Length: 349
Image 1 (cartoon, rainbow, N blue to C red):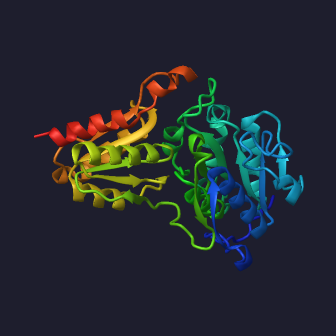
Image 2: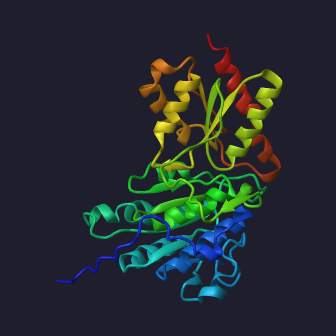
Image 3: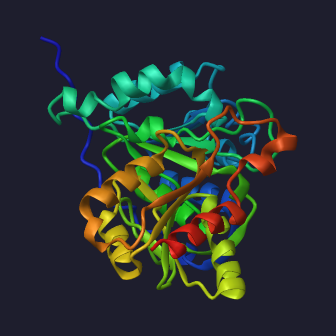
């Protein structure tokens, strides 16, 4: 009988950064992600980074810049343009005890890998009754807002969130990009790590010595009393801008909740906010029909019905394919679309 080797025991929280390297810096999200990969690779020699153009070129967005030079081409390497093969390689490496961090070059290119993700990556731990962990973090530059060509601006989160066995994470700023990636790499389960491209160049403070909340934790980014806005990723900045306009122009107080982790969802934080305000609007970039907001609306309506003063509304993208770059601004939900929903829930009898 063939013996299946069990992967080595791994910590489920990120290894500490050395005190000499611990400091708060102003970083872009790209720099924060690069730092997270470096720190994870330094902490665990089994962490491998691979994908299209991630080695010599350092990735399309330079997230992996310098990793091949620092750690060698055996730990950071390029793969053929075959997304299904990239995920298949990651699964095999995880079985042998490695900690793969593959990159899919763009969100729209992840669909060829769908079968490997859904049929194998998400199910392997259950298939082996927990004997084999699957510590694979799939990094995907995601969502729109950069004026890219077709297949380069997709909202794929609903596909992954619907697939049992996967964790789904979406950072909104540089600090969360660093810490959520560190937590994801330390997790024993596969994580789909969706990076909002339009926030790649936004700067923010990153404290590598003070861990941010991990997977399954939402954060209230702005306290409010009138309406809860649930959102994630690049749309958090949209919600924050809309909250400022709402206060200035209408005197409305919006509470902005950054979900951060779509699976597992921190519903306790969501529920506490909705109970405080009695009104809720969900904001996300993806199409409205069966988008992630549909599940949020259903669960809030089921579990918090008697806490609501108005129906829960959604401000989303349209139910069409993602448009050409010149129409992107009209397609993406902006502050106006969000505030229209806020006005409707405020005016509800």
